[in-house]
Length: 396
Ligand code: CMC
View 1 (tube, protein in one colour):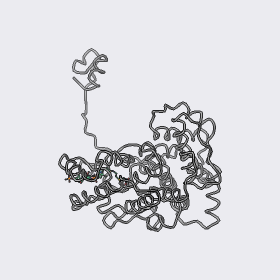
View 2 (cartoon, helix red, strand yellow):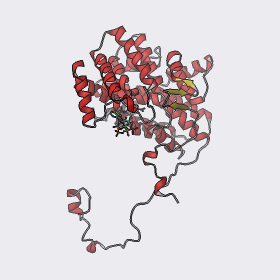
View 3 (cartoon, protein in one colour):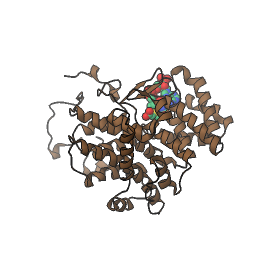
View 4 (cartoon, protein in one colour):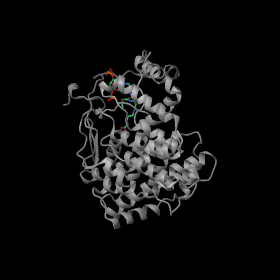
């Protein structure tokens, strides 16, 4: 039987799977997908090629890549019933909730669970990678009261998403930068949403349920939402001369500085290094951004004060700046993260199926034993139905 000494809150440091999908070395700042450095992929690959690599474990031949891209291109459209369902969503709802509902709804249309059939697996991979961006962009259009923009078959993956969201074809350089951002967010070992995906996968449910559960997990502010808060922080700071006093006040009040620190990385996150380069490229091409100058001053101030504790920029520090400059509204930052992470979730889904055992951890029971059952008349100490609401269910 497990004892209290075995308990690790948040399963910190507990291996939950054997995986060949990705690797992180937090002290040296190394991230590899299938053994390939993230820097090489960011420079030389595309998002869809990276997804192929993550999911099938090797870099595709030209023909395999072209087939994969072709299939995804022609599965981008949503069924009209899904669009009709989305019309009923409240405009004020969070786009992550809309995305989770839509991902789960795909299971209604493609519910056959032939998990041992490679064709079924490939079709599910293609559908999810193809349709998730269309769902995010459609909700963005619909909440503004507009019809969704149909995907354009002549545009590649990243350019098509930006087109569906902004109603205009993006500059190819901006689309390339966005594609690189998707590569950087595609996978990151056993984080909360990936763990969630693997737990759901282990029950042998359909892949749409797997992705929907992962989207739900990514939605929380402790996981997917920090880049939105970085922009709010830069907004609150307002100008370079206020940076030092703002950071000092955060440290004094034991308030976390958004976009800094990481459970694994104790040096600057390699993704942050690449994203900073992309931000510089964007601002050089499309004009300066005063937020970037403030961000540089924040990085310097935090490094001077907290660098000794291993607190450096993480992936979220510069990604918000890049997305903002690409015209993506801040509450779509996490859905964009989800678009990218579908690649990693599907890789883990497939890996989990290959050697599946249903997740069934244990617990340390800390409650009481052998308690008497009191009849309703005897329950003097327990709150009754009327006072339950008033006390939020707590015992009086
Ligand atoms: N600002 C100031 N101090 C910090 C920060 C920060 N951002 N992050 C950690 N610390 C300090 C913390 O106060 C603690 O100090 P002390 O030992 O004196 O009490 C020490 O560093 C360890 O912090 P922790 O919270 O125990 O570290 P953790 O590994 O549990 O948390 C974290 C990692 C990412 C949750 C945390 O650094 C944080 O909340 N950062 C801000 C939010 C953020 O940027 N989140 C995005 C994470 S990256 C996303 C991804 O990879 O998927």
